Image (cartoon, rainbow, N blue to C red; front, top):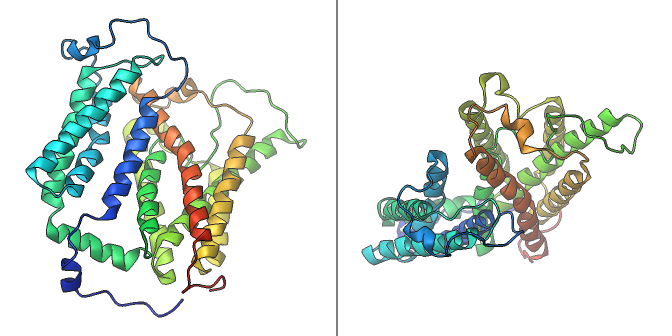
Length: 373
């Protein structure tokens, strides 16, 4: 790597007040996740209920679950924030954000009435629109010219050049959601059911060892994949260790925080086990030898690690059941299924799109870089 470049003067960055591309990219990622979550389970389409527009006129609140409505509100915060920021933080931009949230939510609720196990709710539409409105207000307050300049300064100092890096950063932020379910292993790709034993065929004589190897290797590969993914984003190689520690540290704190809120005290560490610890330690050991490599090589290794982790996930012979882990929670309401389903969905989707991004980084020509650092 060449010498670290100096940051352009604040006056230079202040002349560039256009909304960052990142807002557009994060908006697209957020809408994609909302779309996928709203259309789950994707099969069994039918409608035998009341007229298709009747749910718009249900008396309020027709269906109400505090946690679900809180999630609905939070999910549309970034929608309102990004749209208001993109459109220039004006009153009309804020109104457009509210109307966009209202329209998108209405479409999702309309479609949900044709899916088994889903309920179309006018209250969901209102809470989604309220989230978009609140997000727009946040953009009006936090998205000031000074705020945008601070973002531009941080982006210039921390992320590698190019729009692709902002795409990658937006997708990284959504990865944190996949780590919020406290019943899932930290950075793991497999879950051991807590119910009755399930029969399976082991390729080696010691079936228990086979499962431990899969669980530990899944942790190691996922750790390397995420860590090297982060390393491909940063501007300078010297920033890699700090970026990885910060990313994984925030994810770990979030995991512990949600474990404290949702799990019974005796199950606080249900998301960690010896196999996860061993896999993580091996991942750290390998990472100490890999983080200094050139960016494209780090991206290639991240791609291979995430792909191998997916193979481990597909090889895992046991099928976790939601009911198996329900006894771990403090709460026993339907929102736990939705919360776990959201984290699992993003956890399944994230490696695939992250791999596509890494593949692009590997193929992209960097004249200033070589394959050997």
